[in-house]
Length: 461
Ligand SMILES: C=C(O[C@H]1C=CC=C(C(=O)O)[C@@H]1O)C(=O)O
Image (cartoon, rainbow, N blue to C red; front, side, top):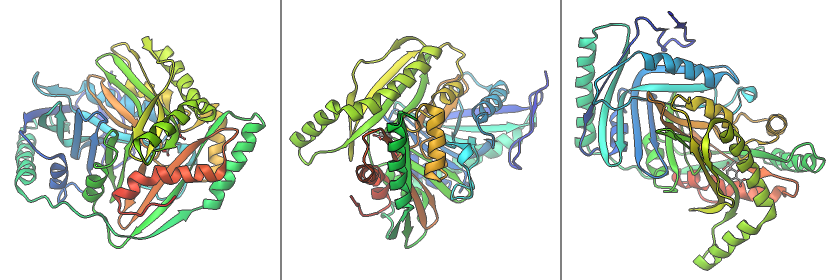
């Protein structure tokens, strides 16, 4: 069958299964700092870079340049579109036995239905790339891959040029002085629609009391203005020092960087095993170890937070029972303690069949009630009506997959969009019947903290 997908963007390849070739070559690269490699792409690949480090620090990925871009502007079908295009590329892959897997990295928008003119204009409903140069640090080993997607069957000269370019990038990353930049200087912080946010929480609480929904996550945004343009690498460097037990990510597009430090895994598939986590229900950290323990106990015993958390466990359990066998779900949550906040946390796992598509799990899980609500449809309608905000890629899946079907997506919370000398930060919280607007507002300040600190902002609340 000669399947043809014609992409909507100029710089996307037109994929024709019969003559497309996907070449890859991987070399060991000794020790290279991932951020130095990212910065080596500053001259030629600005706007075409990504950064990813998983929460347990066993995998770091840096991508420079685009071997191809896969994008979708559709709504619900955005997951399926990317999955289908990736299938076609996977089928065209030509690689040596020893070569590592090339990756597809990117993210989805939270809700294409709430897209409007906003700071997110450059980001479509889905944006994924296969990088031309991919640095991978896996279990301490650093490799660099070249990926070339072409219709030119031989492509020998093209590939040779890429080898020279790879060596140039490695040389810059190893030899050039990599200046660690100071945190930027914030000149002002703008609260965006604070009153509307407080009213939204009040309104949603009443709706929940009336029985219209059980839980709805309401978010808001603030804007930081800086003295000067903030270089991408500065933001990434400082965020990667925040919340060590979190995923660190950055995705560049049109002179902008979406980045963050999120503690929440949406889904990981690793050799036939699937892992997810429910992270919902929060309390602050204590000033001393004893105080912290007391607060942790308070959170574990708090009915409102346990209820908020249980909705997430129930939903993810339902999805797992559809896709997985041999499922393990702890009966009680544990505490996840990160720098500014403690969360209730329940990890789930199960076996998936070899051919399970990670995008179908991403689609089934997004949004969990940690970011949307219960029931999903009703809560999404309330979010659209009450927030009047384009969440863009905030609270949505971001991550990677490889040609073998392994991969990992995190939920992009504790995140921001950096645009030159401005940054837009996002945070929200689960609203249930007895939520109080001022307390929820205060909690959003705690959730802004990791990005605020990384960007040199002073804390509030
Ligand atoms: C929506 C956010 O957090 C979610 C994840 C963990 C705990 C949450 C909470 O306790 O409300 C939220 O559901 C955010 O950080 O912007």
